[in-house]
Amino acid sequence: MAAGSNAFYTQQYASAVELLAQQMTPRVASAFTPMSGEGKAATAVNQIDAFEADERTGLYDPVTFGAPTHNRPWVYPRHFDKAIPFDSIEQMQMNANPQSEYVQGVVAAINRKMDDEAIRAFFAARNMGESGTSVDNFNTSTNQVGVSVGGTTSGLNVEKLQNAIQIFEENEIDLDMEQIYCVISPKQKRNLMNEIEVTSGDFFKGQVMSTRNVNGFLSINFIVSNRLLTDSSSYRRVPIFTPKGMTFASWGGLQTTVSQRQDLRGHPWQVYGQGHFGAVRRDAKRVIEIQCSEA
Image (cartoon, rainbow, N blue to C red; front, top):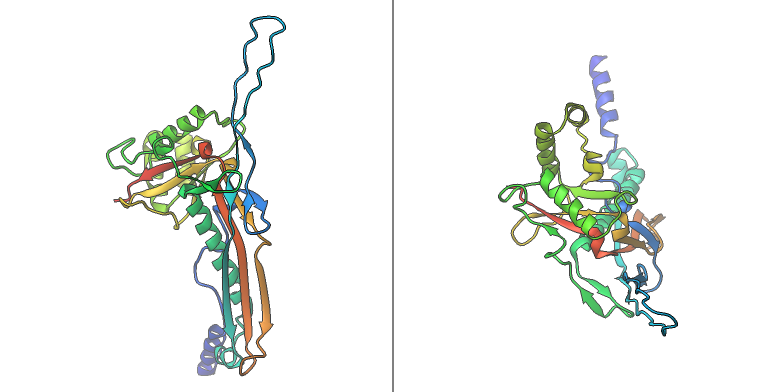
């Protein structure tokens, strides 16, 4: 009786299907300003630069017209898909139907590509102008917090975050009206938790240490990601931004289908997903890079 019971439970365990640990949703792209794209390219926004008023010093003077500077950043779609087949023989051998898990896995795979595209766009060159022919590179001289701020070749620290906030304010970003987001790796989160433990008051320090959540520190929303890029010196490129600084455009949204392949022997089933999307730095003054060492 015992042997039979063990065999039964082993069979039941083997028939379970589950996805291994992985990022399932787009964490970074969801913090951007969203838009719907059409055609082969789209303008994220039509921009007008700041201009100043003129002082009147006399009566009945002729009007002097200003010439506001107009510009527009362009966003282009990138195309991603994934197809996963499963045959009736495989289903029989697995003693399970993996269709639902395959659909979830395909959606998760494309969602991760959304974040890859969002992260790429933070510091990538962008196309500007009436037709997108002008190229604008990320300005590291004005919008970068260097790796040695707050300590020689250091990781993420409070001084770097305060430096970034200062740049926002010097760029006339009203932080009472706009939220700040910062994408960090688990390493930067650990750096920050260590510093909060040393420098912060008992209330916030206790909150951070008990929840392992640094959100709200300096009124910043932190997003933890394992997909951040590094520069040529292997320093982590940590973006800190407001949502108005970035645009994420979707051409038709994420689409999935489950269909039977009549053209293949055995008529296997196919889970298919595709997404068409792109991202761009919408306003350069609202996007800052923090260099972080992970040594």
